[in-house]
Image: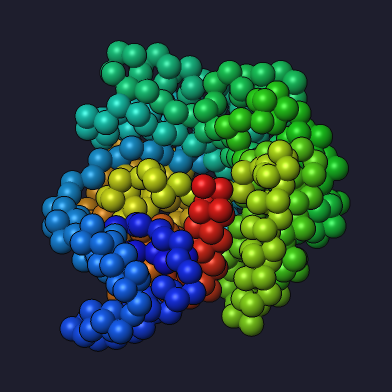
Length: 431
């Protein structure tokens, strides 16, 4: 395969054409066309045709740069920290075992004020997203219901549409609240790490014991009740399970159709942290997983693996591809007391507080820094072939790994590029 970065065109080529294009790629930009003169005539004509169509060696669109410099983003999504409490004690939890160092439950009044804030700061945007997050949000599910009801009251009058999502460890799911969730939530994220021994090594219940047996039947009941649509089972792999493809396939064999297993983000000092020397093994796992998922799809047993879901014929607009999640400008996290942070991973780090629900956004310099954090302001991203697919990676991971939101984490970048490579390959082989 050959990817033209700026146009997004993906080409299937034979060995001879690949050799010519590789030599052109490695040549000086002033002489790369001279390389083509020595190529077979059929390759010459095909390559010249694609260059003329802007689908090979295309130039960057400078108007995107100017748009990004002058854009004025509005808030379109909130992460509501319904509960700074959790009944699990996951070893890799970035949130201090769910309490972020600031225990508490969000009141209905704070939640309603958050929706008011979102409406007032969303400009003319109609579709707005609200994720109920924690800790474990179902520890405060009565408040969740009150906030949802308030949103439904306000959206019609304000010309808005709330898209509610829930991230839960599943331990408090019951027949009654599964029915409520499926009626009111557009998407649900269900946390489990895969095989029982993998999950229970990391995701333990407060007071002791693994969580797998408690969680599995409940999240399976929810997925079944949703007809296996609009949900993800979401896990984390660590250095303890570098063979993570087995965890993805384990979940698939259990009947789950939408799966996301992601690498842990942790300080290098932790024994479960991914290290550079682990990358070759992880690359092999992604290759193995891509091949197996393609095989299953062809046999009618396909599942959706989040990181391989890519359609290069459509997808997000260029601004979305450049900016990613929009943390700190288009997306904010709200704590139980009403403080505003750029995203859930910055919550508790007071130097990143950008305001609160009473006074609004006050950290204008900080929010401007986040608004201008995109692939064109990150030196490493600007020269990366994957920039329009990863959108610069996770801002929080960059900061906590390297002390700057503009300096992406190397290991995260390597894994992201591998996932995108597999995704592009999987997409092209389905065509």
